[in-house]
Image 1 (tube, one colour):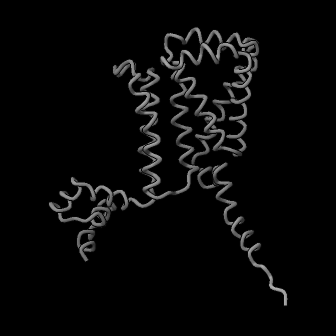
Image 2 (tube, helix red, strand yellow; image 1 turned 90 degrees about the vertical axis):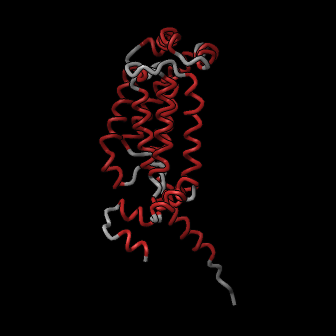
Length: 258
């Protein structure tokens, strides 16, 4: 009597169950797409405009425009970016110019067609970081915020521990770039490359933790600290009672005590 191996259908079923998750990492799902469509189309239009602007400019195809840009921005670059501009971007200006043009157009196409959105967003972030480190903060800083927002929309729900690890990773560039800040004047901070990159990184770190699906985990974490334990002892309220109060449940205290 022949025994039928059922492992293959199970594997196929598992692959089918994972397929939507895999697609979700590349494109916005329909519900989120409808909500964030204006933001995605705005980004697409911005990248498309930037690419077309370079396509019709002959100096971009020869690398002359990029060399002029690097010379113009030299005084505004972050210190560690100057050697990269001098020894990498300058000698390969023609190749870099072509890559920038086609990359910007490719990002726009991916965003419009809702295909490979995650890869397009990360590519856009890399370009905007380069522009910002070269001293051209506006509009790159605002593009960074919008692209990070869409990345969070693409991300899958995770537990608190994973969220905290990711937040710590986001804080690394904030700590690395902050020492290069040149001003704290309110009217000038918007043009400071280091401050803007640090600010966007902190926003991403906070958002990473804030979107954890179970806020009670955050309250439990806070209550486990020394300060949290003192507050619990003084108020007599558990994290669950606090969550009920915050959610507008008038009977939170009595229900939580049950």
